[in-house]
Amino acid sequence: ASWAGKLAGAVPWKAAVSGALALTLSFSCFVGLVNAKAGVNKPELLPKEFTTVIDVAGFLSSGQ
Image 1 (tube, one colour):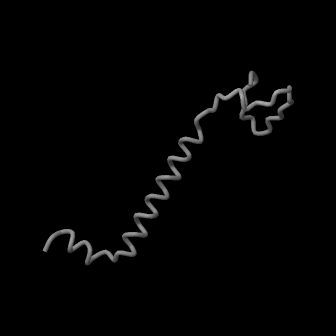
Image 2 (cartoon, helix red, strand yellow; image 1 turned 90 degrees about the vertical axis):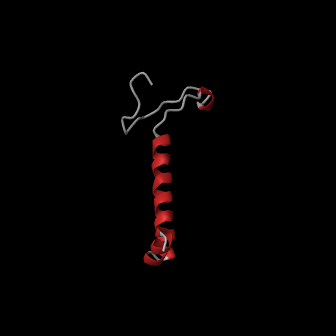
Image 3 (cartoon, one colour; image 1 turned 180 degrees about the vertical axis):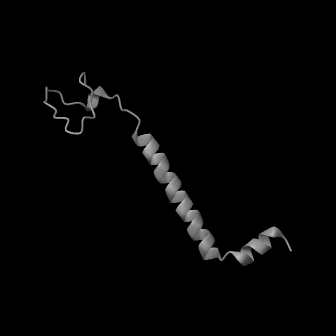
């Protein structure tokens, strides 16, 4: 009768739940990656005494 009834009959509920879960997990991972790229400016997290840093990955600029 209605489109919702036809959809419920055509798509098993396990497949619908599985698809919704996969979509939610992929979206949450994407949001996590976007937030991970943001810089952090918290000098209180730095060590109190001078420490030498070896930047093997080349992530830091020369001034940092």
